[in-house]
Image 1 (cartoon, one colour):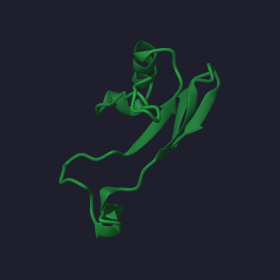
Image 2 (tube, one colour):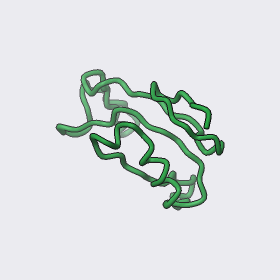
Image 3 (tube, one colour):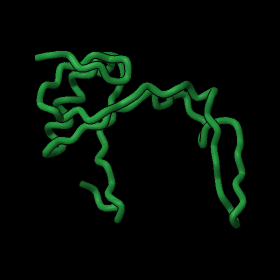
Image 4 (cartoon, helix red, strand yellow):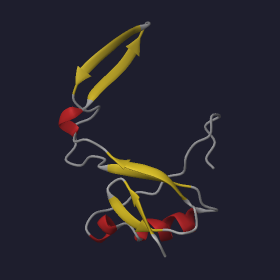
Length: 96
């Protein structure tokens, strides 16, 4: 398998299922935007207080949740922290 660099991590996925991904800046850089009555309200900080935050993401295109779980298990951080697997919603809000 040849390595693929994605979001600062090298993964070995030759199948073409890895679409992309990136690391995300820390929660101290968050700006939250809410629009009410056509007026944008922008505040510093995350939407909710939490001890955990999203550090990055991988976007994969696979046939089903079992394959997504197999690939998630290859992410090096999965040995130390939880890795969430979520489907992408289509424009109608239906899970893939």
